[in-house]
Amino acid sequence: MTQPAPTDQSVTDTLDCTGLLCPLPVYKAALALGRLAPGDVLELTTTDPGSLEDIPAMARQRGDTLLSVVDGSDTQTFLIQKGTAT
Image (tube, rainbow, N blue to C red):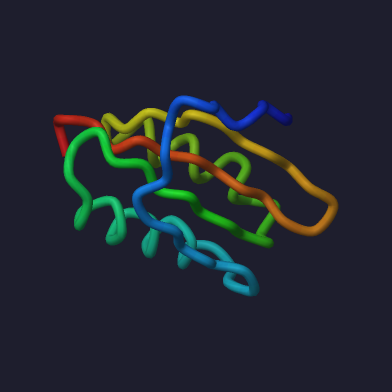
């Protein structure tokens, strides 16, 4: 699953979760999103293949918007826009 990164969204914060296994990428992403203002964008990088299912599920549950997912050979990169409900 690869989607291009949107060109009209600027990244507000980045979070490197490479080397971490579930549930840490989800946990750390939720904490980082909690510090952002609605509309801000978090760029998250992981190496846990389970993140391809876990991060989109977290975004849906929190009311955030998953802007893009890039599944590279060793890493996954997500752009998540914080919603207004969280």
